[in-house]
Amino acid sequence: MRFVIIGAGRVGLRTARVLREEGHEVTVIERDETKVRRARNQEFPAVEGDGSRETILEDAGVGDADAVGALTGDMNVNFTACMIAKHHGCRTVMRIDEAYREGIYRKYAEEVDEIIYPERLGAIGAKNALLGGTIRAIADIAPSLQIVELTFTEEAPINGYSISEFELPADATVVAFGKRDDPLGIPSEDESLETGDRIVVLADYEVLSEVRQLIVGESATRAAANAGTGGVN
Image (cartoon, rainbow, N blue to C red; front, side, top):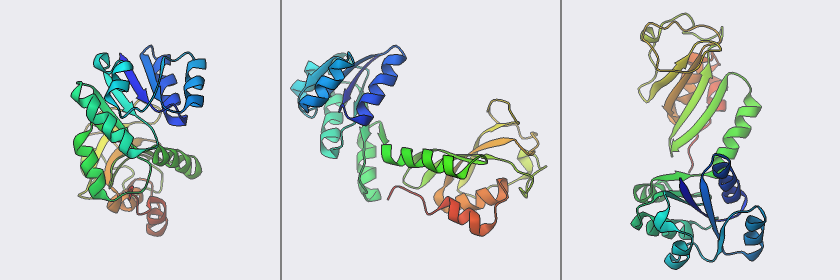
């Protein structure tokens, strides 16, 4: 596949490297001369200029690209670039960094294919490392929704139940399940829930603490503290 990445900073260049390692063609757009040289030193085709200008995007081959990643630190540049790329039939991915209201998120989310938040993803990774083994946040998929992988402990109130026998809060649902050391898959209602088994749940931040209490067996106080109020607002 062919990709155009706008922004050769830390996020953009790392993304470009990962795509290239998987065999894809990547062209980078960057207006900072030093970053352009760095991209070229790493043997990326690089177009120097403003990625929110259609002529620059065309120079980078947007007309033949499968997707465009607008990954600069400037939200306006990213949004404009995505709108141009969409006109050319590309999948569009837009980076957002700063704090913003949910209404602004929804405005952008309706116009582009996907929004990413590098700082939030980095924070999730740090939180996973700090909390350790039984809880692993996977992704934020909306301002109030998170996908979390949890490992059943001996203290879990539903340890020994089957999938069909336990109920999650109304704003949570099971996405995948895996027995200890087995790959994750679509859960069967007859699967028993035992220590070491893993379950992936999509949940609203408001009910994450309840989910943690059921599956990991945390106290209400600790579960609430660990789940936090969440969101990207």
